[in-house]
Length: 420
Image (cartoon, rainbow, N blue to C red; front, side, top):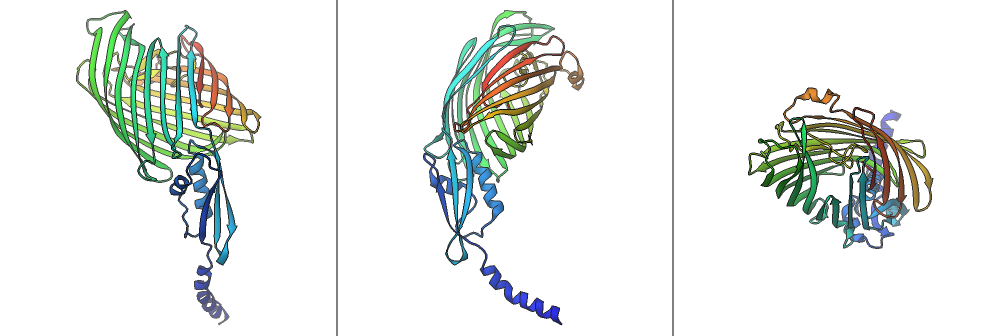
C-alpha cells in the first residue's frame, strides 16, 4: 500500500520536475577578434530555449576546435533567473593568414619546393582562399577557394584552378623515359555536412594533360607527345571522430575518394580510381601521441606507362625520392610515435620516429605484385616538429627516411603540417 502511494506521489511530481529542467536562456561568444560571433552561433548545435545538455556542449567544443580559425575552445555555464542557465563559449583564435612551404630532396639530388599563402578565415566565416607556386624542375601554380558553410551550416562550395608542370618518369618494357608533364584544369565541388562526424563532397573538373618526351628510352607503342582533354567526376566521403587538444590528437577518421576520369584519347583511356585513408591517433601518457595511417587504393588495371598511383617522398614514403615508380594499386602504411620535448605558451618542439612502408600493383599486373620484393619499400626514420600554438597549421616538419629494402634510397623531407 505504501509503495502505491509513493508511485502516485512521483507521478504527481513528474510535471513539476520537468518544469524545473535547466533551459538555456542565452548563449554568449567571447574571445573572438576576427571570427564573427554570429557565424559561431549558427554553427554550433546548442540553441537558446533548449534543455542544457553537457553532451551537446562537448560536441560543440570538438566542432569548434576543428575549425582553422580556432586553436582552442571551452564553455562556461552560469545560473540565470528562473532556474535557467546562461552559457558562454570561450574562443582562442588562431592567426590564419599563413604562408606555407614544402621542400623535399633525396640522395640522388632531386629537389623541389612549394610555397604559397592562404587565408583560412576570410570575412570571419572560416572561408579559405589561397594560392601556391611550385618548383619541381618546372614551374607550377594554383588558386583555391573553399567555403564549407557558404550557404548554411551544412552546405558549402569549393573551387580550384591548377596548372601543374613536372618532370615525370614513365616506366615501360623494364625501361624508363622522362617526360615533361602538365595538368591544367578547373574543379568545382559541392560540400555537405551530413552530421557532426560525416561529410560529403561531390564535384566535377575539366582539365588537359600534356606529355612531352625529354630523354630516356623510347618505344613505338609509347607516344613522345600527347595532349588530351579530360573530365573527372569525384565523390569524397569523410568520417571524422578525432578529438583535438593543441598538438595532441585521439580517435579515428576515414577518407574515401572515388573518381572516374573520362578521356578523349585511347593512349590515356578512361579509368576509375578509388582510395581510402584510415587514420588512428592515440594519446600515450602526457606527452606522447601514436599516429597511424593506412591507405588502400585501386584503379582500372590498364597496362599503361601513365599509371595513376605514384611512389613519392611527399605523398607516402619519406626518403624514397620524387615519383620513382607508378602502379594501378597501392597499399601504404605510415606509423609514427610523436613525443613533445618542449611545450611553452606558444611554442612546441616535438620529436618523432616513424616507419613508412608500401607496395604497388604493376600496370596490367595482378594482386601478387603486392608481395613482389621489387615493389615493396620500407623506410624507417626520425624527425622533428616545430610548432606555433596560435597559428593555424604552423607546424614545420623535418623528416629523414632511410630505405632498408632492395635498392633503398634515403632523403630528407621538409614540409608544413603533420605528414598525416
